[in-house]
Image (cartoon, rainbow over all chains, first blue to last red; front, top):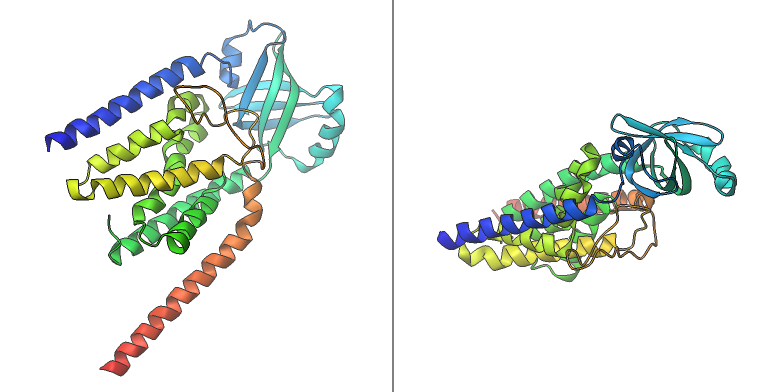
Amino acid sequence: MRVRIVGFLSCLVGLAVLSFYSARVGSAAVDTIPEISRHRGLPNGQEVRLTSDVKIAEIGSDRFTAEQGRARIDVLIPDDLRRDWDTTRPGIKPGDYVSLRAAYRAPGYLEAREYHVHKGRRLKIWVSVAALLIVGLLVVKQAREGKNA
Amino acid sequence: MPDLVTHVIAGYGVQRGLWPRLSPWFLVGAVLPDILTRPFTILWPGSFWWTMPLHTPLGLLLVCAAFAFLHRPAARASVFLNLGAGSLVHVALDLFQAHLAGSYFLFFPFSWRSIEVDLIWPETTLYLLPLWIAIGLWLAIRELRKKKCAVTLGTQGT
């Protein structure tokens, strides 16, 4: 019993240490829109990477508005990405997910360097929820058949 | 991550096709890294760096060990190995993806180098969904037929 408790708690402590370390070092990079909003004084040209949990709120001919939680920021599409944007734009709609590598420009917008619209991410999330149910059923079925640990 | 259906099919395929002795914990391991991290990053994007270690080999090793310690001593090794092997299959499949940001740090906390093969976007595996549904239906029908045969044989025997 003692081995069980000590072993379990040691693993939890190890995980907590890893999480604190990751949060402390990883968070040094500005990688969410709320963080950009907080750091209004980001140096002009600083590279920012936003993950795939960013949504497109508004779509324009040479820009879009990215949204994460309640925070929003305009993303300008530069000339070298304009042709790609012109072909991508008709197929996207507000609410689609996007990931982005961009440069911060004063007084408070981003200039895209690379972007990818994740069409189908919403479907992927729901499909994954359904898959969890399938795993549950398979595990229960196999456990009832006697394939226990 | 590829969608969880792809992870489940891969785990189930390995379990059924390659190594039938793997326990249900292997299937749990095949979805474990995403269960531990994705709900948090989808609901609270700022939590990415807090949950990131749970999607790395070392973090998963600790999670699998924690699960194993909750079991009786005789079952611990089996739970740990099955969960760990399932998680390993998950992490291996994830390596084929491309990300512009928020990718995988295989050697964390020893290295912050992000490692990926950059072959497909995370949502590309959705194109395989019809195939997975067809295979799932085929397996379900096969299972039902087997049960029906067993019931028929049972009634003929009595």
